[in-house]
Length: 289
Image 1 (cartoon, rainbow, N blue to C red):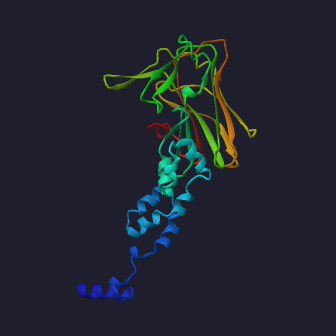
Image 2: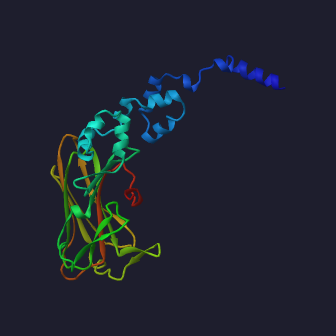
Image 3: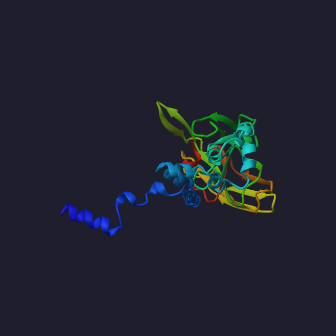
């Protein structure tokens, strides 16, 4: 019975199994052409299959197609030692840029999304212009492990809330979303557990806050939102903007305001402003380390 089965298998596929082409027999150049159409995580998984796939996965033209068109600008902006980058293969450059890279004296951070290669930027609260930030009656900076910059601005109470920022950057072509990461309440650790003091939250249920974006290429975005969900970090979508050319140096201005002076408001933590390509999957966890 076994001999008959073996004979049928060999006769059916046209020869001895040892003479049939195997996965490792595919030329590296052919494998590389296939890998170019895959996402970076899948390329890395297939590189573990065998020597041919690993060799093909190192091809510069694969990873150059995954890098942003202006990756050299990003390298100069984010990496202190650009001379060593010139000696690296494009795969290693991609890997370097997928890590969080601080710039502007540690107040901003840039990285590429591992799956899409989309550009992501984070701007610390210390890089924002906050009305009254130097008056400890209104604001204070607090240290926390819940921020990628380890510091957030905490609003005790104020009549006039105004948080502004700006960024000049060469964005690869695409649509970008801007978010403010905020929390009502002040969180801390107690006996190793996270607790959030919400007793000083007030004034946010009366009127919404206003988010505004303007760009140097003439785009505007305006949105309103009531701040809610005390004790939890929330990404508030301020709006979108488009970049049409990777060679253009675009200036973006953005703000968060609630300047209705009929009531005071307080108990708000301002952490980070995020700007990311719209192809990047969004969520509070994906923006926190």
